[in-house]
Amino acid sequence: MTEKKTCFVICPIGPDNTPIRDNSDNLYTYIIKPIAEELNYDVIRADHIREPGSVSNQVISQLYNANLVVADLSDNNPNVFYELAIRHMVDLPIIHMIRTGQKIPFDISLMRTIYYDTDLKNGLRARKELEEQIRSIEDGTFKYDNPISSAKLFKKINDASHKDFTGSMEGAELIINAMNRIEDRVEHLSREISKVKSDDRNYPNSSNQMIAREMENSEINLIKSEIGVRLNEKAKLISLLESTKSLKSRAEYERRLAEIERELNLLDQSFSMYENMKKR
Image (cartoon, rainbow, N blue to C red; front, top):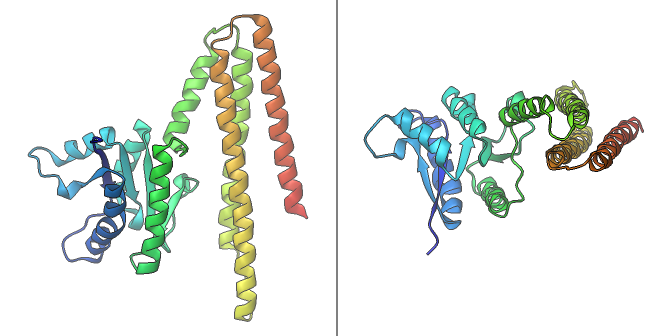
């Protein structure tokens, strides 16, 4: 029999018989727990830990060691975000969820997040999305990145650029500059999403409001698609940098440098195409 893995749930707890506790209990009981258990996970929440000892230490242990963490970002609970940062730091699989109608904080707004509600229709949709994300983690296709892991990666690359691994400093600096450009563009694109959402658009009737909403969704989807392209380019550049460490000759290094420069040209071309498309 396959050994069960652990899914740790972080969420606002709140006192008994309060709306916060009721929402967390419903999310845990009807959405997260059934799907995770079906996929062979033991599901744990902080207030369900029965072992003696410091609750804080037990929570941090789970954040470090659990195979999967599911985080409910609803209500901007400070404890949840503290625990979220710890999980981001250890850079292990995490799935974000938030109640429908609430706003995701800017710093993590580019991370995939499942919107949920506990009515039947939205609950079933959230369960399906949660199952898909867990399965993609299981098969290795889920790419989880977060602001802390990105910062750690930049430090690693910057440190590497000052070391001599077969003369690849030039290539490393090219990639660092390119990744800085990607980060700038992703930030620019995320600001565009905020601008689209906050535009003061006044329409006299519901038909025009519906058209405006469709235009807004289309524009946001285009921007999100472009963000995805940028992040894929970033991953490819990281892979190229990592591969320079094993190069044995100057000729191999120069070929790889040419490949990096081609990638940078494609990056600039694809972003120009996106800007031109937006102007039409």
